[in-house]
Length: 341
Ligand SMILES: [Zn+2]
Ligand SMILES: [Zn+2]
Image (cartoon, rainbow, N blue to C red; front, top):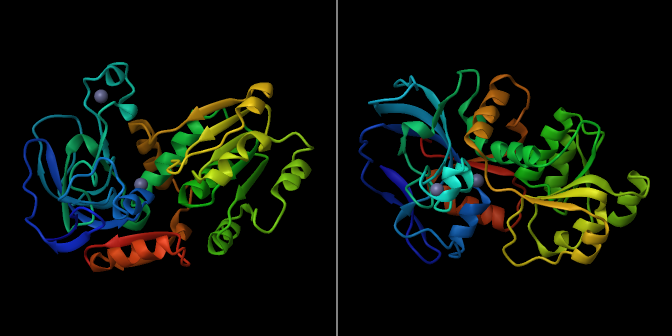
């Protein structure tokens, strides 16, 4: 079968590999779509600390079960089922797992980084990671489940309450999904700070309010929109130096800062004023199994429309091109790869 293999350095090679063989309590999935994520860009730049070559990358995948080897368990999966996958797995033995926090396991692994992932014609995963999705949800939407679960988890980690005024720094896929969920949850004001003009266009089309800090004075907008107080809750979803400097200022006294973005080049937070304003700061890592299940339910019940996020569909052979497009900040939002086409 064809697959995108990380071969070390900055090399991702599309080549023929052996089709995976499944063992006890595993399923074989024919991949329909797999989304390109920030983590894949990190791998492509040669900077990912965990991935060891050769590994098939890709963790945001959706597909159809084509083989199943079920020995136990309540999950009644069948060949032909349309499925989403929870791409994280935990050791179940460390102190964090024993305390019940599997998603922040000390030895957490991810398909597409620690084991072969979804930029391939087929992928094998344990049955416990598979979630059946109803036929009304199409495969493109299922490929957005993972970022949707991150957004859901971010809000559940916060102490957001209906009526709160919220700012999101960073209007990428995660920032935008947080905005859409907060709108659904009854925020009285949602502002998304984003510099990329194409992203700004999508944010507007989705009915949210973008602000471009390169064009407008964000400080005075924050003051003007919040009666001079700052926001109840700030979601940091960019993970860059510039946004880290804004967090304390834009959040109100006794407000909350939620860190969703992964700071790769360091941060600069005004801790003196954070203390004086008695603000809380809370971290977010991936999602729980419950978050993934709830994200599936939200798509099944059509609570949220994720289709406008998908701007491009490329072939597996075009994966490196897709990564380049995101890196060059071309007019793209979420790019899905289809190994079938
Ligand atoms: Zn991802
Ligand atoms: Zn563990």
